[in-house]
Image 1 (cartoon, helix red, strand yellow):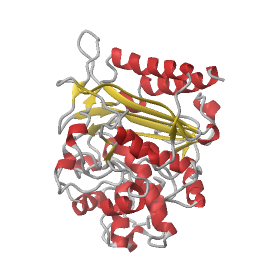
Image 2 (image 1 turned 135 degrees about the vertical axis):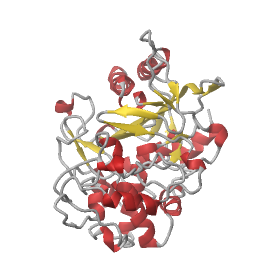
Image 3 (image 1 turned 90 degrees about the horizontal axis):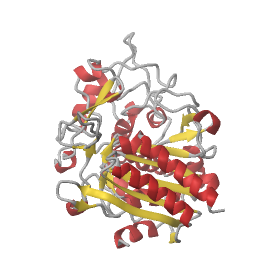
Image 4 (image 1 turned 90 degrees about the vertical axis):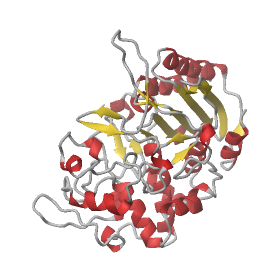
Length: 405
């Protein structure tokens, strides 16, 4: 057992309890098959049930080229696993009266004034940024050649050294996709929100996350920088050789991965450049244990960081299904998707389950009805976020729990 993970999850009062063999065997099989078929290079999977850590495993390689084994305390670039952390911090600031979620973003960022196609300049609220109803988008969510491309808007995990003022200036020139509050589009809104939080409190976003979330939950490895390079997992992208076999490719800065009509542009070394802005939607690094600490705190109602009412608000479906980019039956809350119709989604998860992932290869979900939190951080994109592995793992968890009864 790795002490760093034990220390990390200790803040959530998670006691360790061995998994039933039915659960352990099925989850092991899902992980082993993904690695054997070279869909994943490595992964860390943690499962908590009713406040007990029932499964923990580091599998495969953290770095294939040096044969460095994956560790439970491996540090990953979290990508959009950043969002629930920043969303929780925003809710805490709202509780403290330090920000107003219903205020226009121009109260805190006076120069940020994107327009609609007709040239009008609507108000965007912080709440709309939080729920992806602002009319903003992501560059990777737009077709090649879009205004986001032409303006070279950063998605928050590319372009090392780019400052937030420059990116906001570019983003403000892009056309809003719909009037704020009248649609849903997954977007860079959390980057805008993060800077609004910083300006409102006169405190840099990294310091806010440390103060409001990381320190109270003992998330010692969660930061907008790498705290220990020896534990960092090397990222890879899905690969397919000419003979049809798989071999994920080592990711480098400027790696581009096609994604629907657009493309994901990666820069794994972004956090090494101190001038890179702290992306509220994609900029954190951390461990699986840290992520589990946050999720278990949410599942328990807020604990050390939030009032129960704030957590209930975050877990409510604010934008109902169906939504662009989400599976059937999933709406959106604050920081994550919310399952409103398990039958439509064809999932064994309970109504009200929250879930999200990250484009470096991560997925997680919390099924509060069953007292279940599952975190899977991998170093292989996109398989670890929405590939076959994510469904195999989900199904293995529920089948294992059912068989153990």
